[in-house]
Image 1 (cartoon, rainbow, N blue to C red):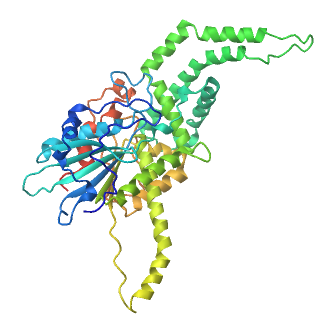
Image 2: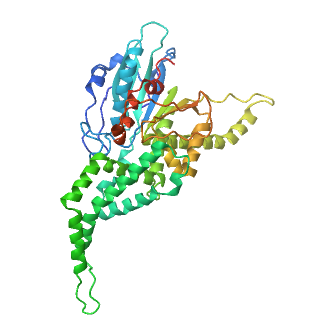
Image 3: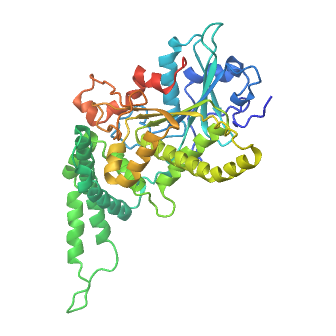
Length: 463
C-alpha cells in the first residue's frame, strides 16, 4: 500500500474548519452529510491514493470549486447588507445540487462525506456504490478554493476612504474602453445599475462628509482680522443636515431597496482592485491565481486521473487566471528540463534510439458559469486576453464549457478567440420564468445550480 500524499483524513472529519479570521463557522447541511459522516465506511475506508495494485478500475477525480463574490444571506434580499461568504458556502451549494440532480441517475445513489485536508481546505467526497454491472465505482473529491479573506470591503472603510474609492469607481466604470462595441444588453444594464448604485452611494455619504469637514480643525481665518471664519462651516453643516433629513433619506432608502447598492459597490470596488492587481507589490489577482494554481498542482501530484475546475461568477475569472498561471509554469518547467533530458538521452541511449515516451498528462476540464471575463477584458485587455488565450489554446485543458444566460444581467459570454467545436463550447442556460424585477436584483444569477445541464457537465458519473 502506498502512502497517502493527498492529505485527506476520514478519521478527522471537521466541517467546516475555523474561519481565517476566527469567526464561528456554520454547520453543514445535515440532510446531505449526516449519513456519510456517521459511517464513513459507506463510501469505503480507503483514500484515493491508497488504492492497491489490481484495484485500477476505481476512478479517482477531483473537483475544484472557485466561488463567486459573496453568499446571499438566508431569508434576506440581495439588496440588504451582505458580508463575505463563509468558508465552504459555495461547496455546500454545489454538493447539494449534485446530490439532488445526480442521485437518481447513479446506481446505488450518490454518497457524500465531509472532509478537510491537512491545510484546512474544504473537501466533500462524492462516490457511488454500484452493484456488479457495467458502471465502475469511482470517487470525486470536491475542494473549494477560498479567497474571501482577501476582500477589503468598501462599506467597512473609514468615511474619507469610502468617498475616495467611490469617486475612483465612478470614473473607472465610466471609462470609454468598457463601452466599445459590441456592447451586450446584459452589460449595458449591469453598468447602468453600477453607475446608479455609485450615485446613490455618493449621495448617501455626502451629508456625513459635509458634517465631518465642518467639524474638523484648521478652519480658515479672516484675512483682515485674523478671526476664524465659521460662517462657511456653519452653512456646510446646515447643508449636510438638510441633505440628511428624512425626505432625502427616505428616497435613498427606497432606491437602496430597489437596487442592491451596497452589494454592487462592494463587488465593483473589489473588481477594480482585482483588474488593477492592487495593492502594489502584493496584488489580489496574483494572490487568488496563486491559490488556484497551487491547488491544481497539489491535486495533480496526488494522483487524480481527472481534475475539473469550476469557476462561478467572479470565480470564473479567478479560475481562468489561476489555470493560465499553472499552464505557464508547466511550460517553463518543461522548457527548463528539455536540455538536461536531451543530454541524458544522448549519453544513455545508443545512436538512433527512440526518445522515451512523454509522461502521461492529467486531464483538466474547465467549467465557467456566469463569468465577468468580457467586462474584465475590456478594462484590462492585455492581461485578461492573454490568460483567456492560454486556457483556450492549451492542450492541457481537454474541455472548456462556458455557461451563460440572457436572463442574467450580471453575466457575459467569455470572449473566445475562435471556435473549437466539441472542446470549447458556450451553451446558453434558459431561464424563461424570470420576471424583470427578479432580474434587477440578480436572482437569475443564483439559479444555475438548478439546471441539469450545468450539473451534468460539472461531474459525470458515467464517463
